[in-house]
Image (cartoon, rainbow, N blue to C red):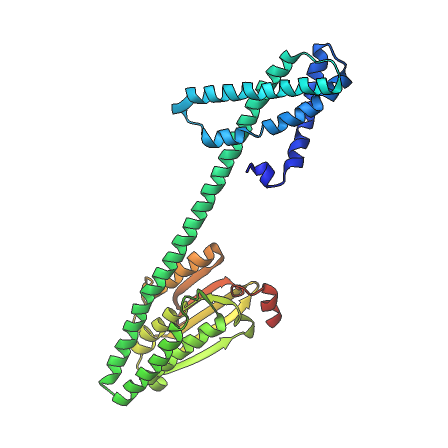
Length: 353
């Protein structure tokens, strides 16, 4: 169906023909033989019929797209169609004059204007078809970009799973040679943590409170290995807990805090988890102490790079990521917009805050 008919834009389309009708009446009156009101009476129904005839270029344009390789065929098609369309206008004028028992105006000027109007309608329809094709291409590109982004996010998450398991199994192996009972306890806690994390399924986002609970569960696993050497300090504003965060985004941060911080220290060290609101944004900070004799890495490791990339893909320029040593601790700071979970209204989230 023609988009003008399908979108219920017909009244606007017919209204656009009002100045064209006035032009045809003026030309007919100037050609002589009829009064202006007689020309208006005859041309009004004829112009109405011709307005519908000028919708046909839409279908011609869809079957005969503009191509230089078929220029001769296009000229023939549009020449024939414009003549046929103009004959519709002339025939409608004769019928209207006969029905109203009025004099028939001169048809030569009307026939020429009918050809011009039909060709102009064809040009406008080609422009509309080009706009439609451009919109469809942009939509396909946006869908392709969304699919690529989702695929990349899924790939990043799949890469993090072996990374996490390697670190955990390495911790269990290190503990097994020292204390078998604690190693078994760590295996049990690890199984509980994996059950919780794998239970996320295909969820793309979690409430920040739930994500912090998973990080806390992981640190409890590592606490079996390090004992009192590992201490955790939390400072989380309640207003942040309902904000959505990509699932398992904090996991690599706490892993690195243990692996590159606590594990390299002989004395007790603190891992600090903090979250607070800053306007419409959430600031999440993960800090860990480290041995000052061990230089912190200058480049982001696999885990931190994945966190940075996931933030960039999810939020674009609305999120920031900073990582590096500061004031004797290694600090990672994430900033991203506070968004409700999918399917939850922002008003509900703000009410809980």
